[in-house]
Length: 178
Image 1 (cartoon, rainbow, N blue to C red):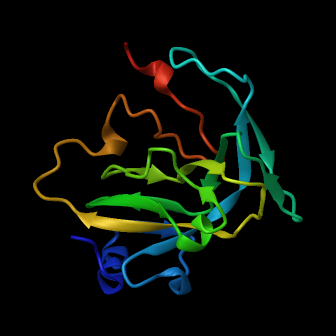
Image 2: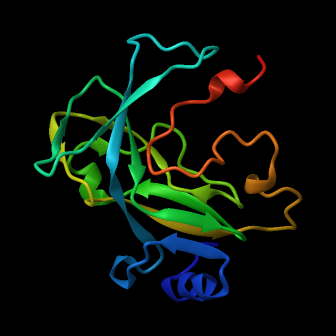
């Protein structure tokens, strides 16, 4: 079951959902619009290795915007810091974003209950497109969880994305044992 706008507001009031900054105008019928933060990043090496720490270079989007190019994976970040203490958050692109040929996540659209951070976006584009800090980039949808949660994400010892950040975070696949 997806939370409605009224239910999202109730959960914010109870503190089980946190969105900072929160703007009532960004609340849709059953979602909340999130915006592109001021930092992007790209990987330093042209070939990535799943067993190695692939480093990234951060850069700030200028006021005049930044043109994303096809064939490059950009890591972006949401302007909003969020917490979810009782619901599963899903991040989806907005239709207006998709109609510009911008994909905001390659695979990681679902958050875990207990995720407390900004969202790193895995951005790719179909053709060159200029993006700007603060532009609407996606929407958060909250789902009800069935059953009791044994371990919240923010209390897992092996959670790889718990460090609070305002910058995109590179893949931590290299921390897995395989």
